[in-house]
Length: 292
Image (cartoon, rainbow, N blue to C red; front, side, top):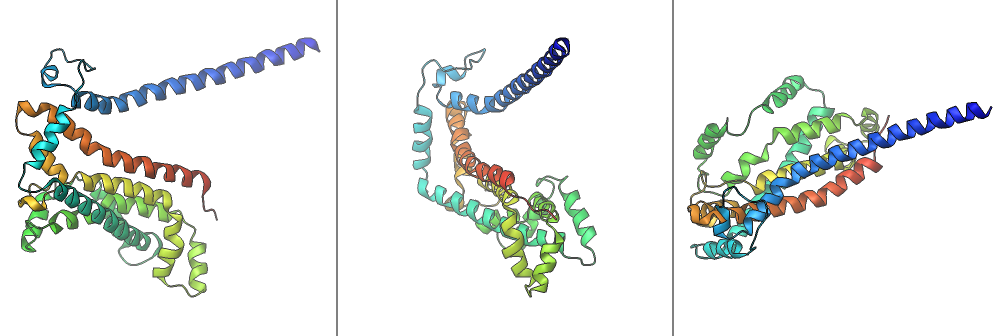
């Protein structure tokens, strides 16, 4: 009997050892993967606080010898010397980003509800077109967008930055896939109670799509914040902060440190939004769910 217990104990210890070893291997793999993802952010931060003489050292160093904030001071000083005040660029970027994010969420949610839960002729063809459109980048249809904006007399107008970004195939596909998993029985029960499609969409379906909505907000905000207005808007008072900062950074090799400061400056708002929204995504996916 003692021999049997000893054998069972050894087998249990071997299983526990393999389990611990697998956990350690997964932890090390994720640690290395996370380091690779954080390395570009670390490099941008280091380059932004390097003085000019350290930026051109070869081979380049991954650390800074004499950190300085001169690059950030030069960035703000150069932007304040423009004809348009710095606050105007900030207002333009915030207005465009908020408008694109809100409109994209509204249109993607309503269109996704119709495509996921309403049956009508041609719905499958439209869904197939949405999937195919995911293969194309915005550069493919840029010329057509410019022609449409010119025909609508929206060139050199802030709406030229907002309207093309409202329709997002990725956001629509994301919301449609999320809404398609919702049980049809809940919608049928709401119809029996006399609720219309608009009420079902906003009071039943949308409140249960928080993970998809938070993910869509992250993508929409990031894309809208990085919109470059140089090819559609030429008046300085309508340009976004990212465009103005890029213009300052593209002034020559002497502004190499300023270019690094620009990348960090542009990186901060999307990181803040991602950090805030990610918590809600994980929390909702962990504690909510709808089953038949």
